[in-house]
Length: 168
Image 1 (cartoon, rainbow, N blue to C red):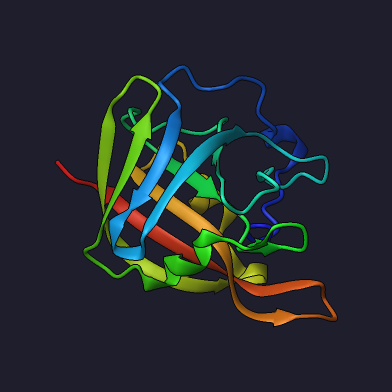
Image 2 (image 1 turned 120 degrees about the vertical axis):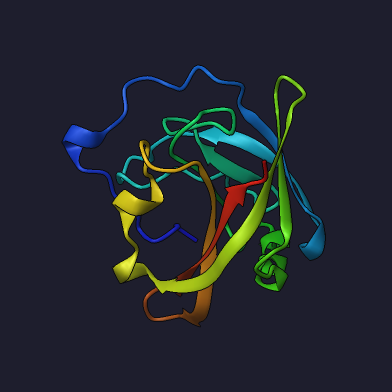
């Protein structure tokens, strides 16, 4: 899984990490998910780096953190891998609009979100600027692979994207 070939333009490559407490766990009770979160950056190919083990989800450490007042917190992870097999993010498809999501941070805080949208997005149409928005409304975006697997292309056709807004 690469969450949509998320490729940064050279001028947009980050140079500093955020200062807010980092996410440590993602809990989505409706999907039976309770995953550790690893801070990740940008891979050599310009995409968001992801933890190799699909039992861990990555947080884009150059973007907003859950305590920030603006922008999208981006979590992304592999659906599966040759080395580890099918991961728990396969259950993300069970999430529905209205479900609660919790992100626990390093300072012990729990940030709650309510799912507003679950959709498959063709990787070729993924709106990277929208996904990694730093100045818009506070949101949580969870991205993994979706759609059919294309053996010839060596990957999944789509990304499954869950969007959630903070619960006051």
